[in-house]
Image 1 (cartoon, rainbow, N blue to C red):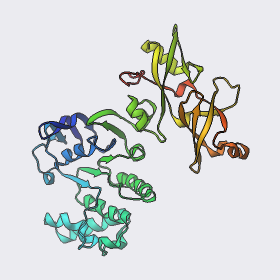
Image 2 (cartoon, helix red, strand yellow):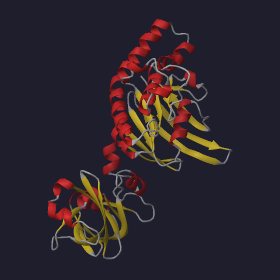
Image 3 (cartoon, rainbow, N blue to C red):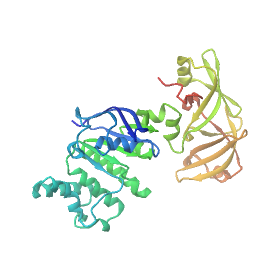
Image 4 (tube, one colour):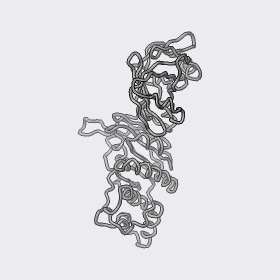
Length: 375
């Protein structure tokens, strides 16, 4: 078993600066949990408290039911992979991976078996005799992961391990970490500022802001039902379109007025608003770029817009448009859905029509920024 439990964990610097506030989280055995958020949100600090590299100001950290607050990092049976690979430049790859085992006086034949097995899993067998300077960034990161693997630790902690790699290597290493997780079958806690990494790697995601947990959930949960406006705009690329608008109510039926067009809010969203007895008035409406469709003049709910910027992303276009009252939106359109004539017309200033169905709309309180449909 390798469960991790954090109860009311707090980090205070200099008796006044609170970096992490009352952090509560239960991490199950063999779960892959990702801490994600902008720089300075407290995610790395929380990871370092789990590792024992930062003192815990208040609260408790338990690993397999044992409180580890006062245990040294070496006694917590965890392995950590850092952002900067922290390899010894004068040692070979083999010796770098074997280093911690030699400190523990592990027999050389056991070390050999562990190092060669880790190298095989990570695909670095051919590099075992090389020095780190002869390796690429991705290869160095594999060595750092291998050094953690051979310790047979209960919990793997990874602090932004891919942030120093270029985009192509990040994509490759992300896939390799997924495969590594399947092979090791242990508990992972992973820190990143990249929401794409969080969505693709995590069984659950912990979204943080200013030292507070904003939401904990599966990738699907945080994407489809963000708890508040911050989560809604942080998860998803391009970020969710949000703007103030008016929610109207007639009995149990709701509608929303956006850019001069009145759109009925029916289906599950309308029923959920009715169950919550949501009040009519000003709200923040959110719609993801991929949930807005191109429409034709005269279509029900069609909103006229003008094209400002057309970003060609390969398999899709990101259309930056502005409405007649000055609102700005991003529309994400798969290129396969467009004929050649339509694509040729997508130039700056071109008039378009867009629409969105109520089932993909999100509604947030203007004051609290909480999702109106939260349970």
